[in-house]
Length: 199
Ligand code: IMP
Image 1 (tube, protein in one colour):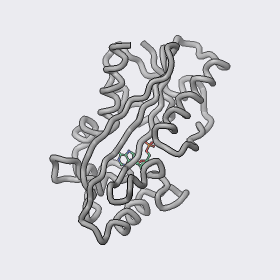
Image 2: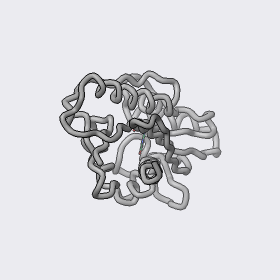
Image 3: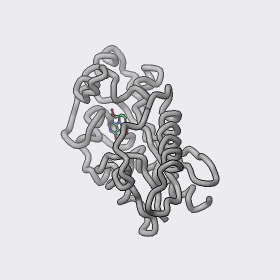
């Protein structure tokens, strides 16, 4: 089965392909020679995922690919912090400004939580999947807490501040393999595979 993943991020495609069973082949946007920016202008993580998947599904109708494509999916993720009412959420990448700087985002998060011990947070991924039968959305979550200082060098984004429940280390201190097996993205992909088996 060929699935088109609406992303041109080669690392993400590799990470997700590694989670797929051998009968599912992931196709990325570069394989269909799509190199534009996909609009991501929606007010929630879920609507952004739907917007991206729908955009590429429509694109394929007008620009059929040379190979058979059995479905299209897109993901969108963010960090939701309880004490901030769910922020930064859909604005995670640009929490500290349009330059999308991970260091500045982490500093801002520490600053906003500096007077509170209420550190609960979760990462959320929503996957929007579209095929001939229609649209379905799937979620993946990992719960944890926000550390009091940045720790660790692995990963990206808020990894140096996020301590998953059941661990003492931040995502940035954990081995890639461990993070990639428990993360919000991994959970969303497991749920997607489950859905594909029953659809
Ligand atoms: P995206 O939708 O996967 O591009 O994620 C949007 C933003 O959420 C990223 O730019 C990061 O700031 C944050 N984020 C998403 N997933 C992770 C993660 O696994 N670790 C750290 N930050 C993440």
